[in-house]
Image (tube, rainbow, N blue to C red; front, side, top):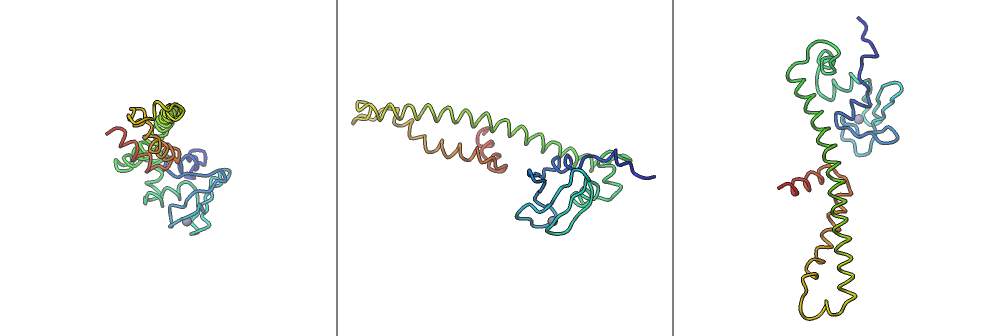
Length: 179
Ligand SMILES: [Zn+2]
């Protein structure tokens, strides 16, 4: 029986679910060779991909077979297109889904936490300006505000890291936050 094209999952969706970032020009880092700059091109219209680095190409089935190291039959089951997925395949699929969910959770947390850090920085900067503008607060007696404003460089550094959006950095900061 000829496999229905309609029942195939969308290539772009699958790549994203598997954690592969596709840039605006439809290029991604190729997972099949040591890719330094995105050389895997995705063609959403024809639902094909081609790597200009290692020459790997094909459709969504070819992709998942190679990416997950599974057979053609297993890949059909993976997408729920045919047969019954094995527990192992279900587990992998759940893993990919959880990874995606964790990423979007992390992204929401990052935005919220960055904003809170920026608010705190603004507050300390205002305090810093007040201290500098008032000689009575800057005298021999160290005022507690001075200690607070010493947090500024650390905050600036943390905000910069948060804004970088790098996944492993985010995980580090998040783990530090929930500890
Ligand atoms: Zn490649």
